[in-house]
Image (cartoon, rainbow, N blue to C red):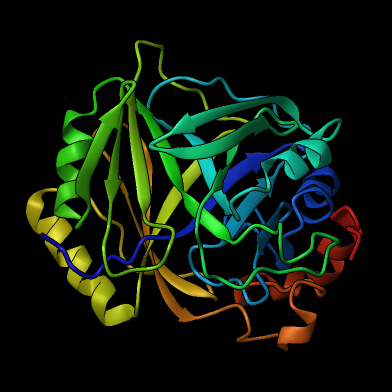
Length: 307
């Protein structure tokens, strides 16, 4: 069993409009845009990162907003829902705030936690989960500290068969907590508060990625040495794992899980302040070195974003 994984690092999804995506996560959810960069493989498309003040691992939601992207189809083999932690007693306030800004608002309870579920304009599924969470939130976008999102609580994976994924999570250091209403929760100890993965088995067609779909889910390790240990263990177990890739703000490896979900293992180092002062994170367009020669062209092409 691996001991290096410390909970979630980030979740990356696909969107259809950069300005609308930016407004939803900053103005509506109150997160900070901590990095404005571009997709390494498609530099004419933004890669936008949202999180707490410094983009602490376990708080960061990221998006590839492909303008005009067709909407994805929900199904199996995907991250079906991303869970954010909010303070106990705040869901009424959040329900009022999200009214008219998000879709399909509903209230439920899972594993004893009160939740407010909703969807973005791209139909991406989220839940705000009341949770005792000591993380210091970002409050610069109009949501006060008593109500603000603390970071991720976790994520729900929707699968045709949960057996192989349960085995993988156990290998990654997660322990089965409980099963309720057909959903099984796995928790990891000794890491960050984004420690929950819920497995939901569904009789549905495979998901088709598009706007509103999670592209991949990333798990955190402290540093590159720990990442190499994880990579070695995964490859020894039979997983086809990519070489280590420098993503400027972390190093990453990727592998496809038996249920179809793309997993990433990302380092907590070096962080989002490696090329910007903390006070100005996310304000300037930051380009990977290999795309710096395209700066003038990209600045003319990319849709302007509000601060």
